[in-house]
Figure: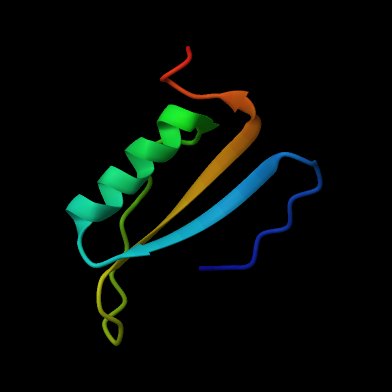
Length: 68
């Protein structure tokens, strides 16, 4: 994944690594309940690393699906 620069307070870029896709999906779903996010992202596998990785963008100034 490439480096990402965020210029506004409250905006986050989260690179998440999990053991499997099911766990990754659960983590993203939990984030979506708390904050406004970009939603499920493309799942990547890196051949030399165990697990899967995904990037999610979040706006922690806005509430997520749970409150919406």
